Length: 300
Image (cartoon, rainbow, N blue to C red):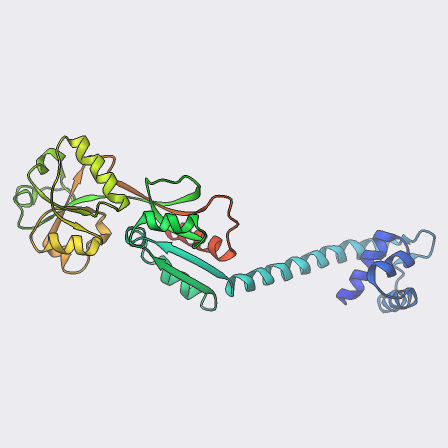
């Protein structure tokens, strides 16, 4: 069976006229009539009663109904293939701060591997605030950000939630005090940290605003030993035996795992929520939608 013949039959069934069908199909009426006769000869059955208007025979009704389904299925297949090709060779600009990246480090390499022919631009910014500004200026399509933050003018989807833990060097007195605790992350109260030296994010970083709230709530100002731009440096300083910091467990890597201990502090503000955000009312590229889908699937 021929898809073109199917199109002829469906169009004739809809218009009930050789003249109207030929015009719609952009072909001559004699050629259309000849094609239908050829098909009926091939099938050895009549599909139309040559009346005015045309009427379908029982065989014609069956053929037209099934042909319509097959044509719609073929069109749907074509549309999906075109859409897939558009994704495979499309373009997307994704931004992130270090914290956003570290909360889900595997997604970017998987995404790039899945779409090797796509035009994927990755932008790392020194802060979440900078990433947000780039979104608002349309310099990025999508961004991995950490909530809470100012989301005015943005739309976002929550991808995962994480908790920050206190990190201390294994030589610290609190580690000695709690090292035999059965909990993986022993619980301590924030007031026990009043005399600690802290490594905190720089004052311009979004995370610093949250830490300022935490210390204000605890009733004391932190003794800041170092302000750092990156979590890996922060953890390295603590692993060397100096100070305290707050990071999610997955930030502790390599040799640092043997040199630090994590503590659980019952403080609601010590939580981070990874979001994928874009400018409000922006029509996202198909690649950006695919990235969101992959990020969500990664958490299942």
